[in-house]
Image (cartoon, rainbow, N blue to C red):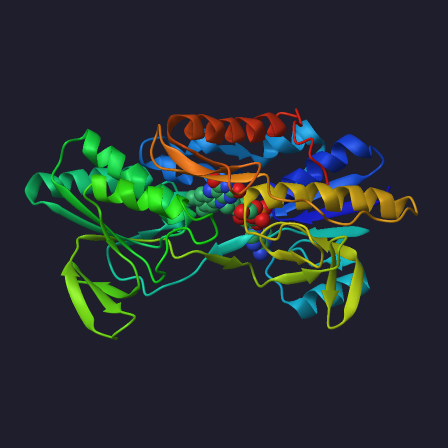
Length: 375
Ligand SMILES: Cc1cc2nc3c(=O)[nH]c(=O)nc-3n(C[C@H](O)[C@H](O)[C@H](O)COP(=O)(O)OP(=O)(O)OC[C@H]3O[C@@H](n4cnc5c(N)ncnc54)[C@H](O)[C@@H]3O)c2cc1C
């Protein structure tokens, strides 16, 4: 029985396993992940007020549902390791080696590390389920002195986290001051113009300070250190809490693939090792952004290509084009585009569509695939 091993059980890895379990019953499927549960990380900003468990599903449960064997293990690797594994057709696990016919590398991306002083907080802390505790600490501090909070990062993730926190603090009616710090001159630069203006207006209305063109240098002694990019002027501002959301980079590095998802290493194709998700860059016209939307489509494509290649058929090219992107701005507001980049949606309707996208993924994890726009 041909064996497929998937390394990394995020959006891409699971999409690949689910697609394989539906389309080819003759394959033996394995998943290796460092953790014990899959996290729907597109919801992490909601964990200031929801338990993390609301957004996780255990791999044991998914393994039963989609008929794969789960191994909890962190397997670090370099590009040289991939070439060696390809040659040997097996992975080095602690107890014994795991032979494979096909390997899919879907190890995602990790937060960019900035100088994290005491009191700083980022995506990894949210993933550990520390969002609620952070909010409680902030509320305790606010009972003694007015809060000063800085968030670094004006991309989609930073903005979503900022407005969620703003909403939670406003509901508790505590005195607080929020500021958004960003190196760029424009918020969410990957999204169409108009999105940044809507967000900037909402920042002004919410009394949130916005410092574009500003570099974060560090956080010490209830002070945040900053530098103006244009002039190089360095200065400090009072701040009890800094949140760091400066973006992510591929783990362990970007893996270049051909148009079918097979990894290219030193000019050579590793025919039996494919990649999908945030860690992969496909050589095709398909969407290569680091988003869940692209991760699911790449995961499904490499699954189909494994089935096609095993059956001696030509693999399919990755051609998926983005269908829209929405940034949530609290519980009942969002902004983004749908269908065409010039078609902006905002406010409550946008927020309902965004919730619908999360529901679509929940359905997918329950075996109901409504991602029809394929490949
Ligand atoms: C707060 C937040 C909000 C977001 N919102 C959106 C959104 O609204 N829309 C959108 O499209 N995208 C959004 N994104 C981006 C989206 O979550 C990612 O693009 C998506 O998770 C990528 O999927 P992936 O499978 O490549 O990686 P991941 O989902 O990160 O999964 C990677 C998996 O690999 C495992 N792993 C990594 N290294 C190893 C190793 N060495 N050994 C074993 N296992 C390993 C990890 O444990 C993890 O389970 C958001 C991200 C964040 C953080």
